[in-house]
Amino acid sequence: DPVIVWFRRDLRLSDQAAVVAAASEGPVIPVYILDDESPGDRKMGGASRWWLHHSLKSLDATLREKESRLILRRGKVTDVLPDLVEEVGAKRVYALQHYEPWWAEAEDALSGGLDLCLHDGNYLAPPGSVTTGSGNPYKIFTPFWRALKERMPPSEPMRRPQKIDAPSFWPDSEKLDDWGLLPTSPNWATQMEEEWEPGEEGARKRLATFEDEASRYEGQRNCPSVEGTSMLSPHLHFGEISPATIYNRVKNAGGSVATFLKELGWRDYAQNVILQFPDYPEKNARDRFNAFQWRDFRSSTVRDEFDAWTKGRTGYPIVDAGMRQLWAIGWMHNRVRMIAASFLIKHLLIDWREGEQWFWDTLVDADYGSNGTNWQWVAGTGIDSNMFVRVMAPLSQSEKFDSAAYIREWVPELADLSDDDIPDPPEDKRPDEYPAKLVEHREGRERALEAYRAMKD
Ligand code: FAD
Image (cartoon, rainbow, N blue to C red; front, side, top):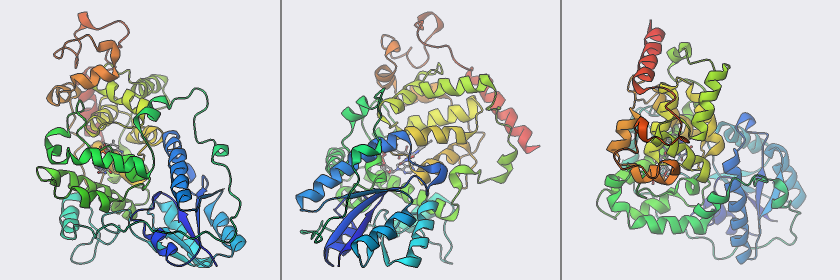
């Protein structure tokens, strides 16, 4: 009898424990189920769906090199998977464990009715396994990382199986093109197509490119004008490469590679947060923020300002460059994500959850744990936070991290301005097409601090 490998955000064959276990057992039926029901409001956003399409195509092609293939089905996984098990007479289902609340629930429900074997491998250490001496999960990053680091490096990655036996007959598969994961008109993904190569091969190439830069990470990572970070986040999110593979490949790069490895630790940390607080991306971790007076999102002025933020028309070049980069390629430099998020939350005084939702829809690396954790961090509403009253000044940030080239790339109407002028175009040099500031820095800052004081009183 065949076994099933159920793929989710683990679209790879290398260092994929479920694939290895299944292949050693007998004929394998690899399956991906597009489930827009189980996640409720958290179904995948537009940019993620674009990525998924290409990643599934790539996985299928890799499987076909091994005379296997990917079977596609659609629907609520707790219905579709048991039906498929019965249809093909599978004796067992192998999968990697996932921690989003809807997946945890589905895994629980499925385990009741079929033999579901869950493996680890999408994180440096299984989420939930890094605990304090008394066995409690960590709430704060620094001690979490200290404990996780003790267990590093992760074990050497598993090789992809030599052979994946085909079953005696293949069940029907839906057609990927029928799933409508790609934009139709307008096709907003043209720059994404140029920038990214979703799939295992693309992930390997990114890692190879980054290997040469890894030792210089610390000095480069905050400068958006330089390609100093790995850009592996969407590949990691979709599980096209394992963190253990990345860790082991770069750990001896020297220089400041330790700073990079710690960033991988943040990714693990975020999963530990949603394991403890499943609704973290939706709820202020600090309750007192429930009384915070955000500006009213039903007001058309506030809506218009939010809209200007999404389109990169706030009048702050660094914010606008970031938001336009996000729209164009589905990714934004980390330093700029912090500046743009802080601007929305503090200068525009708009609830962080509106921004979180926008990122959810537009990032190719949109991740339930990482997105929620980072938004709450910037807002100062989270368990391991920043303080709300630390208001980032977009203009000095922009100068400090030398963003002129970055702004020139993404806000072309400012391209002719000098390096000195471009982060904050003087009134007489600002081109007509470029909008005036939605709010002055000091005014925005004061308004935010005032709202914070009002909440506290
Ligand atoms: P590198 O600097 O090369 O880091 C390597 C890897 O470490 C990344 O690929 C990522 O997997 C992980 N990592 C790095 N920083 C963080 C972090 N702060 N938190 C969690 N993991 C991290 N990252 C996401 O993967 N998905 C998100 O939805 C997401 N939303 C964010 C929202 C906001 C408001 C902010 C400020 C940050 C967000 N991040 C998110 C974190 C971070 O910006 C990205 O992981 C990073 O920019 C990806 O680029 P990179 O692969 O070049 O990172």
